[in-house]
Image (tube, rainbow, N blue to C red):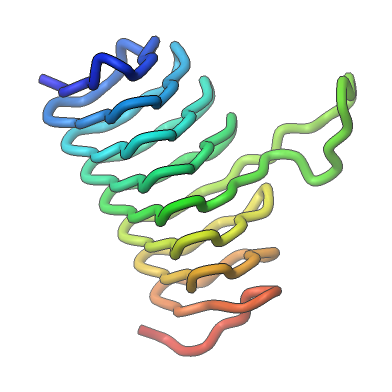
Length: 152
């Protein structure tokens, strides 16, 4: 059974066993969250989001429509995801770009992940990095823009 803090607004019925959702979180109705996840305070999870099992999401993260997070992923505090490469207010022609964070990846605090990116299995993104292109599996990347530093 999931543990949901009474000050969280969890509208989804798709929350896995042993998942904890802390105070001041908002989880919209169609979001899917796996088993044994830890969703820290002040996290927003939109409708078209899938989160796997054993995922940790630290405070201050917004996970927008189109983001898919696989199992055993770590998302550091204040990581920023985007889902639109050309955002405009009230744009009727906007195109949702899907972002994939593959199994075992870790994203450091305050990193920015542009829309449509794939972060490969077990990749590590350094704190404060701006990820503008796909990251290969088993790779450490950091900087602005993020660059491959070495293989793990």
